[in-house]
Length: 161
Ligand code: FE
Ligand code: FE
Ligand code: MG
Image (cartoon, rainbow, N blue to C red; front, side, top):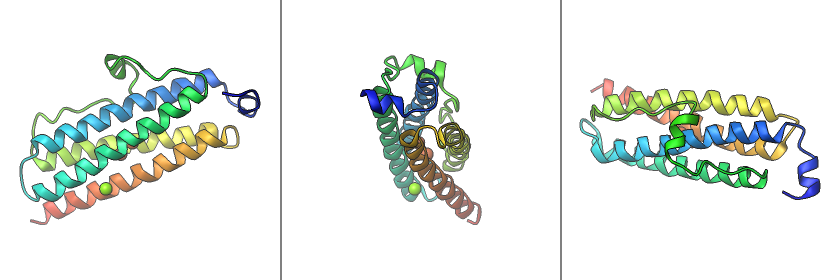
């Protein structure tokens, strides 16, 4: 990043890049969990649930892009090895070994709740200290809050069948 762009950041850049890379690992794993879940899903309301899972997968991929752009701007390197996603993830990965839509929704709701916690922490960490990362975390948080709500509503509908 440029000289003045670096000077205005009031957090430790190395520590910030580390946090962003952990979130970046989460996003790739979340992307794959949604994407593969949509491939194998079985059960009631399958079509609408698959559509939602695919939309969320696209959002998670976009989040990983937003994070990597900022990591590079901060002089860091986004995680280069997929196997390191497992090393750095906060929220982990839940394989859809049971493809029932209800189970998929429950696993992804857990993931969204973890993501909400992580972005709230990133917001607290950067507030009044790094406005640009703060803005990115805030935009992603809004999506994760919407994701949790969407999935909870689908689960509620399934439980009413
Ligand atoms: Fe995300
Ligand atoms: Fe999400
Ligand atoms: Mg949605």
